[in-house]
Image (cartoon, rainbow over all chains, first blue to last red; front, side):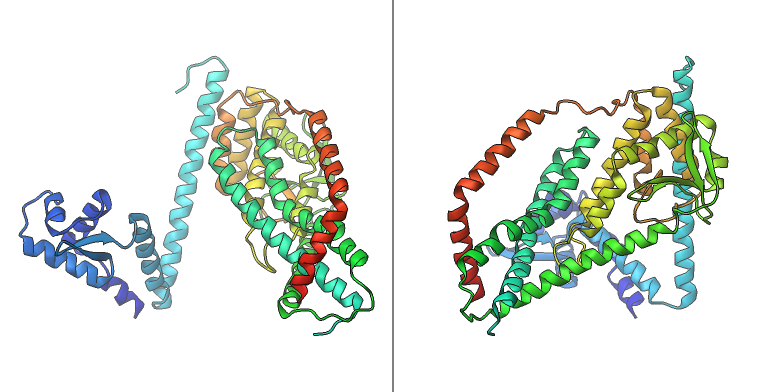
Length: 138
Length: 319
């Protein structure tokens, strides 16, 4: 059941915060990561979270001066892409109704986006026409 | 495996074609990556010409290397009576070379056949300020395009003609005629026929997509010819046709919409007047002629040595 697997890979709130800190500031040990989180957390809480992320495969670690230095295995973009891919794969491998629902939502979203884009382009064209005919652009 | 003289020549030619095409293709891709980083704001016609050269270059270089170096060196320096063997690598590459060429030919033929259906139509209207002849075609999807290679024709569906205002239609037809002047459909056919890096691969297709985008911009420039009003009319035509839905896909056609994903960028560019008139400038034909003469002289002077070197390389390759 890939759908459930994708769900289990979801990050908790603290895990997400830790990942964001690592993406923003780069690698760090437990103390350094804890200092970047912007709120006071126990050393053991940060250590457990980093360890859990390492075991889930989101982080890499190496030993430096008797402490582990953690770094993200994926860039933020790679992670977002992986998550989106897993989400879609989960839906597509599910029952036919959920697959049809997803495709219909995607088509609707693309259509709405296209329509909004064309509206915006038409507004710009009208504005340019006004400018050319001597009126002020809206 | 022992091969007769003729079979060895054929396998050497096909294997060399594959190897040179692969190496030249890799160089093309590397050059395209470098150019992509520096292409902001460059002249679309020049960019399209460079991309076309990068797409067709590998096949042309491979063909030239086989015709000018490999085959002559084999014919001149290889004794006819020796019954030498060919290595497995050489034979495998020869097969790949043959399949690569056949795949290109098949792609070109398929594209040509798929485009033919849209050329024929009984009704022709004269439209636009310049009274361009436009054939009316029946299609579920909106279409305004230049179709055909040898004798390109403007074709359109009634839905598109109804949707466009006179100034927009005129700008759109000028855009399509610009494709005819640039012989863009012939270039499309050449690219379809040109071999990719490997048989049935798509390594060089990115170059074709990039070329198509620049060719559309170049046609936009030529169509508007520096007129801000025509720029706006063409931008409006693009948006109106986009509202009708995705265009009918025809391989050897220059459709008004081009790549739908590029629509926003094209419209923004058209509204950012003034566009260049699309005239060729800064060309120095004498410089190219001089370079060609120098290159030809150098090759002729070094030709005997080149043949011997190539023959030695081929001998090692065959064993």
